[in-house]
Length: 303
Image (cartoon, rainbow, N blue to C red; front, top):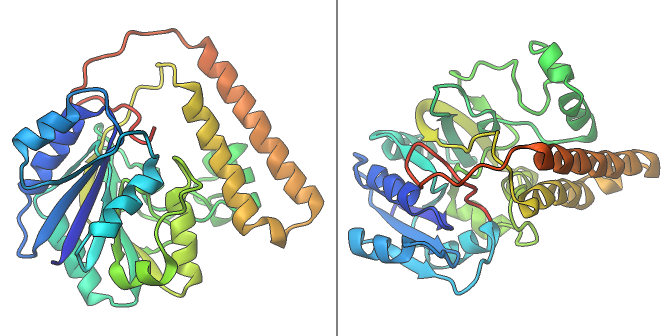
């Protein structure tokens, strides 16, 4: 088996069906399997996947295990030379699988790779090529200096906005919406850290992959479409909490020992204030009824 594709689903029935249709429509000479891990969805996801895609290996959890643990469940039974993390709110192109496996086969020192990720309006999902969120990189990003000076590498350490998104190059980290990882790499560094319930697990994985000496590469010769929800809708408090908890967890795990008490204190205080502001702005947003799950609308898939 060349490739094992892991898709975590949580109440995103139609989006997951659309994603699976795109996967099975892909044209590739490589063999692959698809493993869907359902985190106790309350919609028709499990029945629909079983009915429409009997070739899919389906793990139906009895509770919501989180994004990292669910993917690890898939890795435990995966048989591919490569493991692909693929969000349920994505659509792959016909050449995506072929192009990315070709790239990995040509570059044996690359532990993980990601393609270009575009949003439905054609713009870049900037998370698909990033630097690590060091205290300085996070400061420049949070306070808008990266937007004020988009061509300055010093101020764009996180989103790497000064780099051409149509050119390939090594990066620090990719996005968990599409990340192809070599089996030997996973055997060396382990799977996703399950302390990250949602958010941050992809950055942490990339950090450990690079720390182990493997390369991480952004390869935009193919792309996928990544659907995301509208900003005008209120977000569950748990999403906001887990997003900011992941920041604290990553810093504590990888950076705390490299900085003094004042820098660490500033990081924790900044994240806390940012979370409070996010909760406030979220509370001020108007409540809108939930739209039906269709392929032009994404809901949070990592809950």
